[in-house]
Every structure is written in C-alpha cells, then in structure tokens.
Length: 521
Image 1 (cartoon, rainbow, N blue to C red):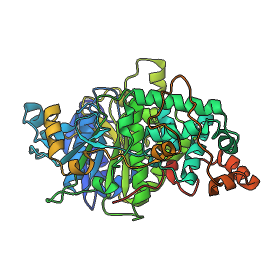
Image 2: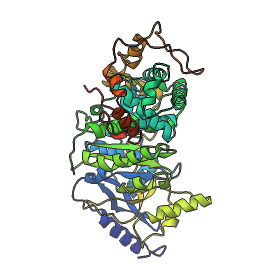
Image 3: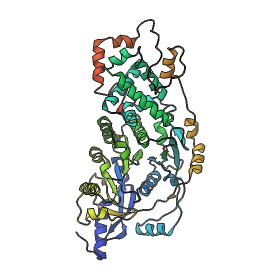
Image 4: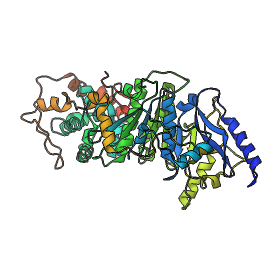
C-alpha cells in the first residue's frame, strides 16, 4: 500500500495497520509512534514485548542520529520493569540516567507525537570503572579468568601467537600457578623462555621462544599503557550486575573506561569477558516473562575489528546460547555491516537510525541494510533510511509469537531522565557512596604465579626489566621430579599437548572463550 504525499487519512490508516503488528498481550517497552508521510500517529505505538528482550537486538545509525538517547530510553523502561541493565558509557553520556530530566518545549512536542505522558524521572545507577584509574567503583578481572582468547584480542596477537598463549595458560593451569595480574603471566613466560624452562616450552607442542618473546613484549606494552590496573583482584562478581533496588527497579550499571587506557578495544573485550562470565555463572532458565539482565555493547565494531576466527566463533556461540540464561544482548554501532553476519542473524530487534550515503561504500552498506528488513509496501527503505530525522528510526522486532513485526518508521519517545552528563564530580561522589566501593575499592595481591616462581629463584624479588630481553635467573632444580615434569617426559602427554594447540579454550579447566574458573563469594 503506497501512500501518496498529503493523503492524511491514508497515512493514518497505514500507521494503524503497521501498529497492529505491535499489539502485545503482556508487558512491553514502548519505543514510539509510527510515522507515515512525515506525520506521527500518537495512537499507533511501536512496542517490544518484554518477553522477547532476551532475543537480542541491534541499535545502529550514523553519529548524531539519536542512538544514545534510544539506549537511554530503553534502559529506563527495562529498569522500571525490574530488569537490570549493563551498559558501556565511555564518555559519560549516559550518566544522566541517575537524574530526572529537564522539561523543554522539544520534549513536550515529542511526548505529544508519541502518545507519552512524560514525567521527569531518575533511575538507580551504579558507576563502575574498568581498572583503578577511573572515577567509578574500580572493577578488575584476573588474567586466568580472562583467558587466552580474550587476552589475545587485547594484545593484537595473530592466530599462531594466540595458540601459543593458550598453551602457556594450559601449562600454568597444570602447574597450579594462579595467573592473577600481568606480572604473573610475565613471570611464567620468562621462566618458560629461560634455560630451565625451554624443555617444558618445547614440550608444549614445539612452541618457539621467539613467539613467546613477542607475547611478552606485547604484555610489556600493554602494561606501559596503564592496562595493568585492569587485571587483578577482587574480581567483579556476576551477582552485582543482577540487583534490584528497594522499589523493585532493576539497577543500571554503567561502565567507563578509565583515564589512563589508550586501547578502546580493551573496553569492549572486557565487556565480552563480563558476558562470558555471566554465561558461566547463570543457570538455564529457558523462556521467561522478562529477562534477568539486558547487556548493551556500545561501539560494537571495536569488538569485531581484526578479531580471530576463534574469537568470532565464541562471540557467536555466546550470543546464541546466553538467551537460555535469560540474558538479552544489544549491539550498538554505526553500520549493521560492523556486525558479522553470523552474529547479526541472532539479533531479533532492529532499531536503525539514519544512515549516510556519501561514498560508494556507504551506498553498498545501505543496500545490504535494506535487504535485512522484511518487505514493506509503505516505505521506500533506501530513501527512508537516509531521510530519518534525529530521534527517528526504522524498526522491526519479534512479536510475542516470534515472528518479525512490520517495518515501522518510528518517532522515538524522549528519555525521562536527564539527557546530559552529570559531570565527573557527581559520578565520583556516587561511586564513593556505593555499597560496592567496600567490595572493590582496594586491590588485593595474594600469592600467585609471580610469588611462587620468585620463591624458587635466588635472590630475585622483583621482575627484571623486560624490553631488552626475556631471560630470567635460572631456577634451581627440584630435589626430585614433580608430577608435571614426569608428565612432560611422557610421549603420550607430549602428543596430547601438541594437539591442544588446535583446540584452545577447550581444556577441562576452562570454559567459553577459554575463560577460567574463578573464586566466587
């Protein structure tokens, strides 16, 4: 049904026809109202059933088109429904969620267009920082639980180096050497590349000293950039992301990167670790009336750029399987083509803000985006996607019965919280007052691989400078061979270790992404 410009009654009928596909029997999030021929119909509402929010989604669009405000509005409604939300907030743009919004003529007009009884409202927010250099409550991950695949992504290792790092993790697991922070992993690699350690390094599938040295230098570079504060204890516990306040509202957790980090990929990879940890910790729940948690990846392209096949495979597996744990995942990026097709196919909700088509690559991305939407006779999607106003999006989601809804040009509702940052001083004060500050505020440095290896060396108590080389003082031979040494001398074990190089992340001590078992409360 093609609507002629200026035919108001036909446009309204088309809007109501589209909105009929968004009628929901149970609880739902209201995104906004249907737009046809440039006019919004306040009674024609576009909704996402709350029960389908664990079917994942995508929020995409060019810079300045309203993606952040859409995420803010979705987080508010999830919070009000009792669903906790985890979001990245690199620049502090979402900190206004904690304060009531300020009335304005533009908000009044948007509320009228979208059938909204807008009321300024603040929501419960926790401010967390990755590492100890930020203004939020500091959170960390141990090297061991982070695992070799995610760490390889951060270090920018190739496939061979990633395989080598996985074998080094496996060796430390078998030796009983906890890898908690960067100095633990450095000390293990230094031992394995020393004269005493080289036979064991060779037994790990003929791993070369040169490759181990490259990994070591990458660790040093990461440490020099301030990322050493990301790794250690106490680790973030999954249950602290699943809280509700005394009013039954889901707590919104905002992660910020920290002032000393120079690798944005560290941020997205750390969030992937949090998601993988949730996958490991949460029980199967199947289909639920509402998700236990919704997880938002902002700047999602950082997660997939230059990613290894192992990494991409694990992301796809996590997204596919975590739905049964009651967790919904939303990716936010500029172009849908930033998301690998195998992952994109898992995303049930599509909220596409305006795209730009200035270059041939833009045109190609636009055409690919159009092909991912259901057919529509109301809109010319290529034209629509380049004509959307700020705070408007082309939407299709999954209905309560799991079918795609009609394509809807949607004027999005305005957030009820403050659409601005509250400033670093206010964020810092909120973090200091948080109950989580007592849990995570102080770094713990318990005995781990560094201390245990250092105890066998004489007289070393501090790691020597690394950039000039990778040698360490020789370790004295033990009085008699330990269990690991005996196993290393076994040809069958050596063959198994060589085979392990092709199945990194599958060893019995590790789970998805090769993330390790960790201490729980």
